[in-house]
Length: 238
Image 1: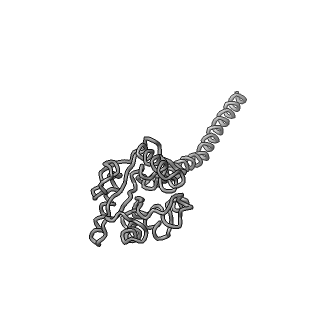
Image 2: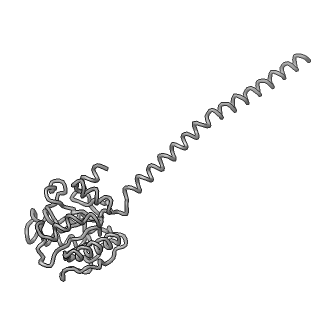
Image 3: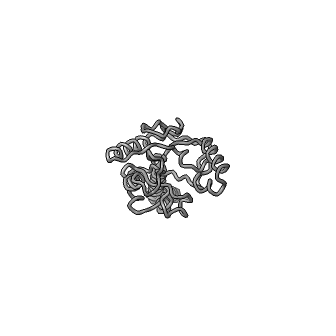
């Protein structure tokens, strides 16, 4: 009888010990599991922040000879720009994405107040329109000149709806004109940059165009302007 009680006692002790050990193991593992969960949440948050920062309303979209837009790409909230355009501008070319459209209206209004007059020449152009433009330039001036001044379809910023070509009443918009000088010195105040600056052709892959401004938002435009960067250089450092 004593032996039976002793055996039962041993069994009870063993079961209790097993329970205590199991409970301790679970408790010891719990912080690790919590830490892993927190870590996964941190990674997810960082990823979300990164994705958000890379899509800033598409204003930092890079379009050039090596970065293209799809054939069916269409800018968001496309709207007619309320400024005067040259007579030959098509209705399509008088459009931009909503935010840049408002910004260029403000820019032109401010310029007018300072005695500088701008006319819109060309803003949005669809993939198909760019194809026609490029083909005509190749046929009239040859492949080399066409590639220097006209982007191939899918590689034109005009398809993004974020840029516009401006001109002056004389239709002679070179870097030394008062309009070009004013634009170079003030575009960033409205969120625009001179997309293809002089002396940076090897970086942008495009000849100097003092008339072509690209919307990137005021903060980015200010940084690019103050540091003398191209959009390619700005994005390379991010």
